[in-house]
Amino acid sequence: MTERIQKLKELLAQNTADAFLQHALALEYVKLGDDAAAKALFETLLATNENYVGSYYHLAKLLERNGKRDEAVAVYEKGMRVAKAANDNHAYNELQAAHEDLIY
Image (cartoon, rainbow, N blue to C red; front, side):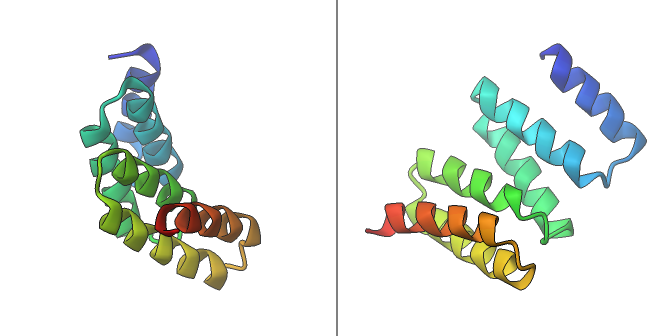
């Protein structure tokens, strides 16, 4: 376990609902190649805070890497809906571009 992961876990223990910390920890797991831990964190985060738009992109990319195309497509599409509802055009465009790359 890296020092960054340990620190993030300590901070999360103090505030388990902190979406930023959950997202950051999931990204650290992605860097280590621990897709199972990252996936679980992204899914937990989005189940409790579906408006955390940035996690949709990273979860979908993880699913793509693991050969779960249909699941990735669904995550991109939900992320686009959430980003559009939040008027987050930057996130919407990133999700849409990744979605199109995957389906075309």
